[in-house]
Amino acid sequence: MRKLAEIFWPIIGLVAVIASFYLLYHEFQGESVGAEVWAALKAVPPSHYFFAACSTLLAYAALAWYDQIALLHLGVRHISWVFISMCSFTTYALSHNIGASVFSGAMVRYRAYSSKGMTAVQVAGLVLLCSYTFAFGNVLLGGLLLTYDPAMMQRLSGFLPDLLTNPATARIVGLTCLGFVAVYVFGSLLHFKPFRVGSYEIVYPRPEIMYRQLFAAPAELIGAAGIIYFALPETGNPGYIAVLGAFLLSFSAALVSHAPGGLGVFELLFINLMPEVPRVEVLAALLVWRLFYLIIPLLAALVVVAMFERKKLVEKLRSVGVDLSE
Image 1 (cartoon, rainbow, N blue to C red):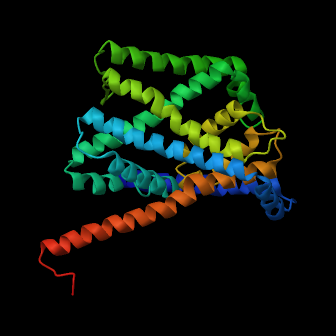
Image 2 (image 1 turned 180 degrees about the vertical axis):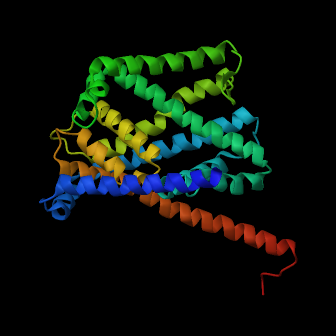
Image 3 (image 1 turned 60 degrees about the vertical axis):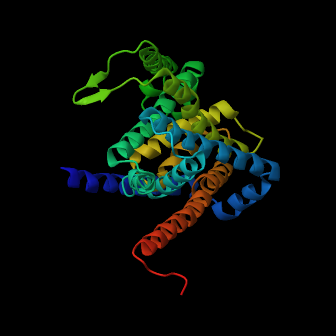
């Protein structure tokens, strides 16, 4: 069954990418996309590129905070912030680009954290809690956005069934999400018993862990959406809240598709969620997002991995008595 799942999800991701590229092709058929996108990229002010870079730093700092929160939950306090940050950065830079189904973040984390004395069980717990923190951020931000502006779902009219784009339905979904967050918060504060769903058990964390999750989880999404917001033109820009809502919906769909980097899936949804901005300019902003959030971190992560593996190799050779000075 496990082998079947390992084959099934990559196939689903590939189908999603192909279908999305097919739909994107029809979206831009007849337009000189290359020249127009390049012109849109050059039109972005240097200051906006700077703010996009700052947003990227915020997103990856929040991801490092995920790991630190999980380590606190596990009672692991001997690992430095620098090591945690580098491990988290490398993990997410690789998994965001390659896809979690192909190259699990658990593998990278285990390789790094085991060198600091952590066991496989501890690393598995860390990965699980980081994933839960991310999901918690989606539920919290999604609940706030849908409750505050339920009409944003109407941007997907004609793309999704009317029932799902109806503002009343969207507000109910938003309030339901906030209800789950409230139960989680009170469960932590009042020390509720673990919540069971079949064979799964959800243990409410200590309040000091829960408080950190409340800020860390949304911060990553806020930073990542900020990259696109600053890359969009001022004319027709719907505002940060609308961009954040569009990013949340598109990014979540891309993750569910299991497509590496959400390729194609993310672009297709986001373009349809920004009808007031010229499509070519939205595509240019998404290319800036891919450059800052995916490509540059991936290149840096490969350097970090190479340096780490070289260090471990040198240590291994020295431990068996190989003289490297010759």
